[in-house]
Amino acid sequence: MIDISSQTASASTVPLGQRRPMPVYANAFDVTQIPVKAYEQYDVMTPDVENVRWRHRIVERLQNHEAPRVFRLCLFDGKSILYSAAPLDLPDGTSGNYTFVVPGKGRITIKVARVAGETVTFDDLKKFLTGKISDQTPKVSVALNLLQFIIRQAPNLKYPNNGRAYFTSGGSRDLRGGLQLFRGFFQSVRPAIGRVLVNVDISAAAMYKPGPFVDIALEVLNIRGNARALSYKKHSKEWNILSQFFRNVLVDIKLPKKTVTKKIVGLVEAAGRFPFTQEQEDGTSLPTTVADYYYKTYNIRLSFPDIIGIELSRGSGKNTVIPAELCTVAAGQRYTRKLPQNMTSMMVDFSKFRPEKRLEMIVGQKGDRVQPPTLEYATSPYIQDAGMEISEKPITLQGQLLKAPTIFYGKKQPAASIFSRMLINLAIFCHRM
Image 1: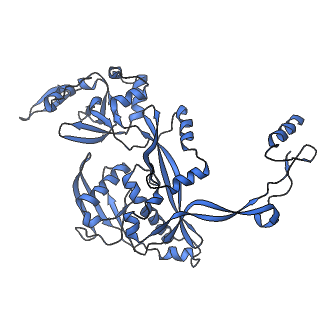
Image 2 (image 1 turned 45 degrees about the vertical axis):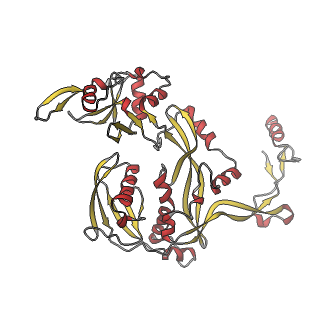
Image 3 (image 1 turned 180 degrees about the vertical axis):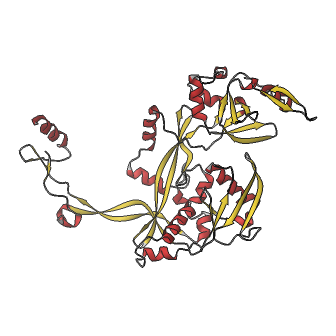
């Protein structure tokens, strides 16, 4: 076997001549001011809305358009929890219902109700950091979780995200097959001895490529510019590929006077020929087709009535079918399934950077195509409102570079250099076995 001449030792036990000090940058940033405000916690009930992206849109609409004075700078976790630095002036005191129209979604009714219990403060967190509390109590955990929401709220409202990281189109790469890669940043609040740190790292995500549904479908199948090729029968090979790829994807449907955003639940063959019964003004019903309906109602003549269409809902006699040529894949949607094998290496290559380049991207400069969160800490309205301050410079640690250990091979002969002779030593060792 190959032996190392000495056992593993800490830097303090290595003679001074064999080690030298070296400052090291870390991808972490000091929280120089912990918030002093207390936060109230509320439940946000959004019935029939499962998509996190839509929940964020609904709450953003409530905050910025419907009731901005009530919900200004509230923090939303994307699921059901809302934090406010001041008690909310709700219609029923501690609760209230709000009904409004969300573009692309329609009329929504949500309920906001205060959670019974104490307000969230940062007192126990400060005691934990200074050693006055030895265990990370539930109050400490809640306070740390709230700090996560404060730093993540602004970018999560602006960019596609998974809650912990957000992604932007700056520096994106085309994967073909209806997908593209976005760069992004991961943020996480972590307690340390006597302080709180924000860990920041670069990240990447596969995204659905936005654009006309027909064009994206052809790209998924690697077909060039022939929309009529999408005239597939149910359960054919191509049908199954497209059904799996587009399941639960959001599409924008353009009509003469409005655009609505809906989720795909399935596909329909020959969508323009799809028959249904349309109710008339006099209460009677007449049979028609999707193509005839769009021509008579919107003066839209379908160019490809025989190709697949999009199914938005299911039920006996209640299917909603939209022609594919009227749909556009909405921007900003993450592809959460496993990437095909031929794209995995492209993702690895896209995400791979040397440490110094990673740090350069994390610290960033104004004007960068991908703006890191570190440049926005000073301007985030949520961080400012909380009274929180975060350093824009990464922390530095005092490290020590140790002399490389001596390696012996064969009959305990020392290697001249572990870097220049490593491969030779291994070759000799393997040859003698």
